[in-house]
Image (tube, rainbow, N blue to C red; front, side, top):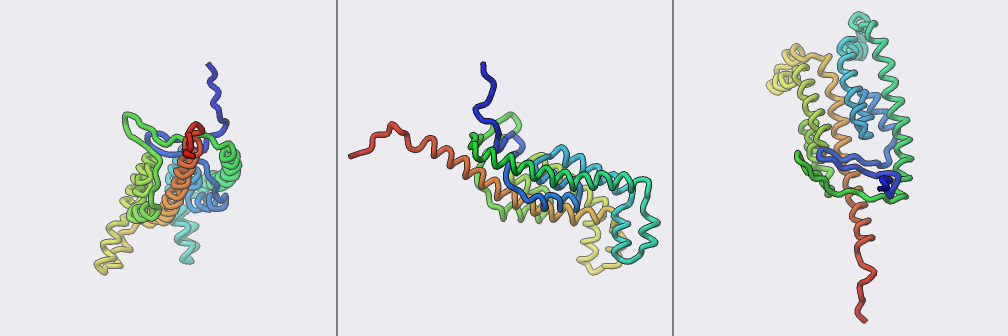
Length: 254
């Protein structure tokens, strides 16, 4: 039996837990998000395993080297404190992986854009539903503004709305851990009650400085992913209608 598929390149892949797809992306945007937080550029490219590894590595090595505190003290002009707090033993290891994440996300984006152009010309079939024991995933049009709103309320919810279950759960748990370790909810509560001095005391800036990069990337990625999912849904419907509607055997009335 011939196992070679009738097409060479896939445009998308549906599993029970996520939807992976090829579409055109700006390599500079991928590089920027890798610059702001290693791993996010790879998440944007749907290279989830590499993204998760880089994110966890960034968390570990940043905590050991105290990079966030070094950045904070540098920005407020306390350069001596910045030099004292940084651990050079870990900082050298941090730089290599950091630069690799930026370079690899930029390079991969260019290559995947080429793959998309070839796959789109080939017009390979697109699976529109995947059913399994654990979950059911299907293509349909969803509102990008809803994904943006849910991601704004808390990171990860917008991806769950788009049925990126594994990524949404990972980001949700990761964001909860960051907010807890950074004492962000306590600081927000103290700020809302006007106790700003107490808010500054309890806020752990080493952990809290992770949150802005996470927050704004997740909002962007969920919104952009919703738009691209809708385009994929339209391509699948267009191909189905071209092939099945209307049958060549249909007898037109005179």
